[in-house]
Image (cartoon, rainbow, N blue to C red; front, side, top):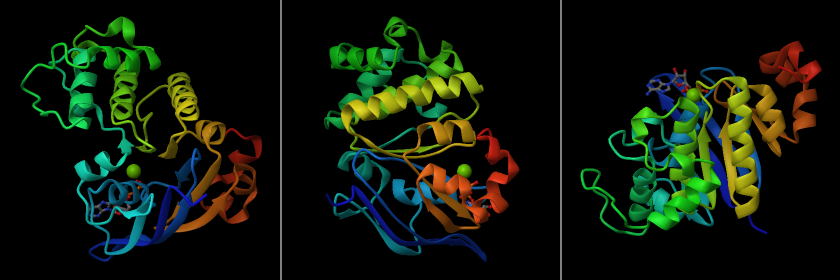
Length: 253
Ligand code: ADP
Ligand code: MG
């Protein structure tokens, strides 16, 4: 089967800084691929190029054969590439279920107007997504009163509202405690397995990475230095020297 995502030669420089150089990889159907590397390695720049937020200087990124380069975020979303937005993208003045209804309406080409209440449109569909992420009991609470971990689950439900076939997640668990990180990533793993969604994600907690990735790529100063099965990456001398260090020996980096 051809890859879901084929990235070839993606480059982005900021002034003299080569943030990403010649990024190239394939992502296969149903695969959970982690992109890791030290701060400033170019992970977010890579995600932003795939999400349409940054235009690459060179390269291609084909999703199901369609090049994402040059498309805006909304077009990319409507092609079936979901992503998690940061907390600010959740409309605090709306209830939890209204946030999901609004995303469902946008996906279905209905007018997307954050100032108009979603009311009852697509409520049932929204409720089933909230059930999937364990948020049904909080459906009618204002999003503004949610605990942080629950906001993250709501963000995930909103990402699913687009019925994505590929999910891009740049630090989906940022700011969460270790236990919550595992819980969120368990939810992500279970959901993508059930729906056959492919995932590219990044994450600082190596326990979470090694627990949830089928494959791992390592970026260092904008370049890929490894791409392979978790065990092979964990054992890679170059990776250990730039990133994992001795902590990887125990599996608790
Ligand atoms: P990571 O997400 O792996 O921590 P980033 O992709 O955010 O890394 O950053 C990669 C490099 O590009 C860093 O040197 C960073 O300072 C630089 N960079 C990122 N975004 C910008 C920007 N908008 N303007 C200038 N430099 C940037
Ligand atoms: Mg980053």
